[in-house]
Image (tube, rainbow, N blue to C red; front, side, top):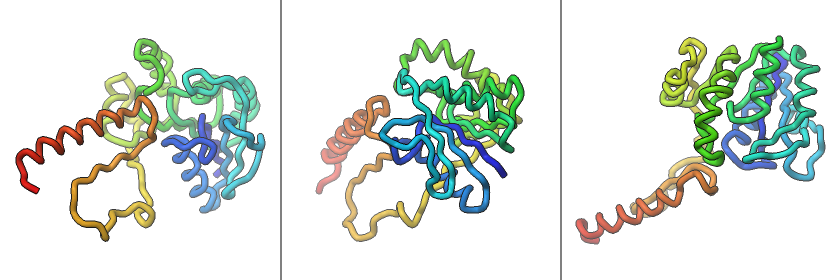
Length: 224
């Protein structure tokens, strides 16, 4: 298949869920013989085009609002090549690049698959999201041919938003168990596991405070 993946961020220039997901999926699909092209933004001093891990990367410059890259050149490239691929795979309704893909599908393009990476943003003000998600966000999902969610909870949120259930498929995130495995050479003790970026909005500070309170209460009850 000829696959076009459109992602606002791409690893390793950016370390985050969508960026790593888009990179790993592209690398794996290329390894089994698919022709994969990724349209993404440019964050560092990188080439505008290159082949890495057997898939092609095309980067676009633009402006950034709320960590959301907006590139007119990406829009015009999609307009020219919207029927060149067997499928277009976009990531998150919150990115302008995904909105551009939905516009292409509306005027006529290859089938569009959109992966939901969570319904709300941890960066954008909530008052703005309350306007955006039921309008443009829902329209993006209505326009897509298929929708991928990581969890049943995310699927239910989209259904509550008014999206047709038959369009939604739940595919849980995978993990490399050879790389990520519990340590076996340490003594038993209280441990905390955080999976995510250390950035404002993720709420890790609340997790640490909660664990501190939990530890204090347990220490008052259980002798050490």
